[in-house]
Image (cartoon, rainbow, N blue to C red):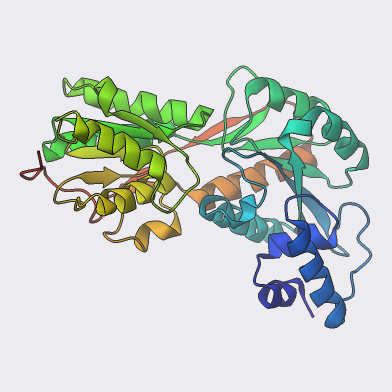
Length: 350
């Protein structure tokens, strides 16, 4: 009986099983109890792994995330973007002769938990998910960890820390350029109501593209919704309805700060009777697997999640082996993927 078998029986990811077996936060108590019960019923024997939960004969790295209610949810490993990222990290660790340990801490209790985590840490290095962390938080975490740390999915230029990040400015610029080249003159922006570094960079890149074409986003066409909901959203429906009630037509296109928002926008617009892309074009960011499932398939910015993962693992292993003090900041460019949710502006609706 392997970790994969328990995950399949429980209907969860391997990351969830690892968290449950190692008594780590990041899953609900109900899920934890179900996993532990299945493991016991099927004769799963935990190997002696120590605190780091490393596989026998292998060194280990720890993937550390801080969960909150905004971007990185408690069950972050089930969110499409992070699920893909963790999969590639785990693969790369295995190739490098390392096992991967998953640990999730509560962002609201960061100061209390980081010191204890650092004192108990037995892994050789840490890959820190920086998606929802600011500069001060990253600095505090890194200072208290006794091993090399690589921060993934964020970048703070002023910190002497290894970072591997997405070129968010480039990706959003590509999205804006695409819509301008299609001939859209009035373009809306649907952002996250929870802010972070990546989203701010995407806004900057998108606005730069529009400015190059002599366009701007009107204040009334700039909306904000929850960034982690794949279904239609009442908040978005209300904002769009208010725009229509004022006698103003909707923009012919919307750029959305992430695919979650874009997919939610497609579904919300459909409920309001709008067709995508015939009436309104939609462009997202991230290219999560669900972007190919929604109808129409989503035009989006492809993030090289595999390359992000591989570089993070390679960099932390290099830091462990060479004990190099000079830190590195790596930014991975994006690719723009045109699918069915964007087209030249049609007649529109009034």
